[in-house]
Amino acid sequence: MKILASYNIKGGVGKTSAAVNLSYCAALSGARVLVWDLDPQAATTFYFRVKPKVRGGGRKLLLGKHGLERQIKGTDYPTLDLLPADFSYRRFDLVLDAGKKPRRRLQRLLKPLAKDYDYIFLDCAPGISLVSEAVFGTVDALLVPIIPTTLSLRTYEQLLDFFARKKIDDVPVMPFFSIVDWRKTLHRDLVLRMRADPTGMLQTVIPSATEVERMGLHRAPVCDYAAKSRAGLAYVELWQEIRGRLENHAL
Image (cartoon, rainbow, N blue to C red; front, top):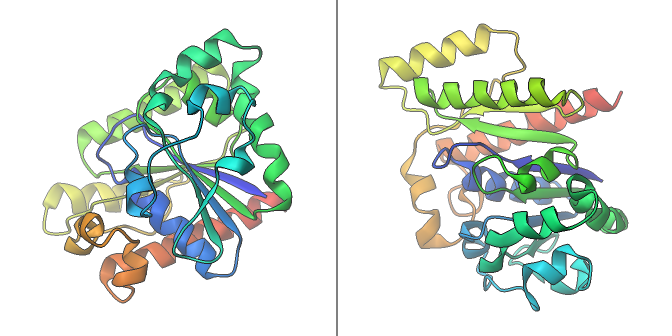
């Protein structure tokens, strides 16, 4: 079982659309997939047509009083399940802070699911918190969407600085460009420059596209209702690249 997180300190960078579409691509290839929507805004839960509600609330879930298996919901896709968001997730930091070894809590919760799933995707809320630090201590790879702008790249550098200060060196970070508008000179220049920089930047680019914006109307992955669109094909290519990186890292 591989655990992947769609994460960025900054919001509005395509984090949720990446989690939804990449998990769908993984399931489409035959893998058994679970998505855990850790963001109390519940966008991923909405896209998969599931009610954002966890029985007993997030606190009992995080403390292990209610097993994760009991909260998992099916989606419209046979091998893709969802652990929905709940508004109480906004207090996860407080629950983690009050417990023992908070940075390993998610890892302990997810470990029993290894027999049921090939991939688990975590859609994370933006920012750095105890929850995100727990995610860093759990995942096999951190997927970081970046808009090709100066501020977005600066935020990515802040993440790398945080990892260096905390001496976190065992988490593969896989950044990729998202919401790219090739008509903009700044976008083109930054994408080309970062592609040539040997920092682990994924080569696949997710374009700025109307099809992605329509996810809220269709409540489905782009790769489902617009599979042949530029964005749909880009997510498929991105998943193939990520899967290849994971396989090479395991060697």
